[in-house]
View 1 (cartoon, helix red, strand yellow):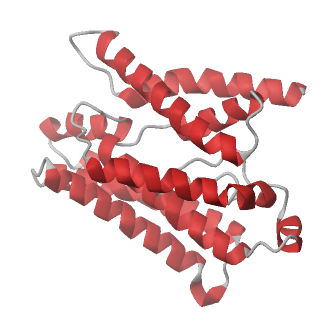
View 2 (cartoon, rainbow, N blue to C red; view 1 turned 180 degrees about the vertical axis):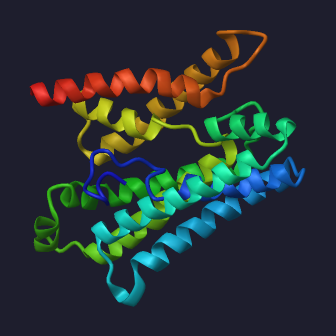
Amino acid sequence: MQVLLRNPLADPYILGISGGAAVGALSAILLGAGGILLTNAAFAGAIFSIVLVFGIANKFGRWSVTRLLLTGVVVSAGWGAVINILLTTSSTNNVQSMLFWLMGDLSQSQVHIGHYTLLAVGLIGGLILARSLNVLARGELVAQGLGVNINQLRILLYFAASLFTATAVTMAGSVGFVGLVIPHSLRILGARDHRVLLPCSILLGGSFLVIADSLARSLIAPQQLPVGVVTAVIGVPTFIIILRSTITK
């Protein structure tokens, strides 16, 4: 997303994917659904948001990074309004479940072979595209001059990143700061080549999430915190430190 949108502040949720998934999940909770129905509702909401953002941004064939980013921000704001309506009109019993889902909760997550397959496909596909990502990171003119099909690469990146984000949000809820902090931390450590950055982001991002989830379960045990709260508490000062060190350099 950071390469696609040419924005260092981009993260997997910037295009409204998590908002669409949240509306689907909260609607299912409001209707009393759970388990597989809740998961399917969240995934359906995420897919709907992906198609909606792309359809609006690509209307009349006027595809551009700026148009995509602005469309995603507006759609995300719209989902935020719907989420607030669902929260304010829900019963007290449902609100806690909704808030836990919104802030991330791994206690109900179930992983099966399809998730591992998708992760492997994503890693292999990312490594195949790594050279093109390295070139695109240097600018569109450079990429075009070296023979990269910019439009095709943009569409592929958008749908691939969106699909992986939709899957992650469906499993764990909206867990923030992992996709924002981890890549920048690795870049500071020297992993700027996407052939190294992508697999390292998977390993370090997953490790960070496991540590955050362990803290969420143990800090105020027997009560459990939403894992998204812990990632935010760790991620905010970490990002400020990264920002300061980058400016200093």
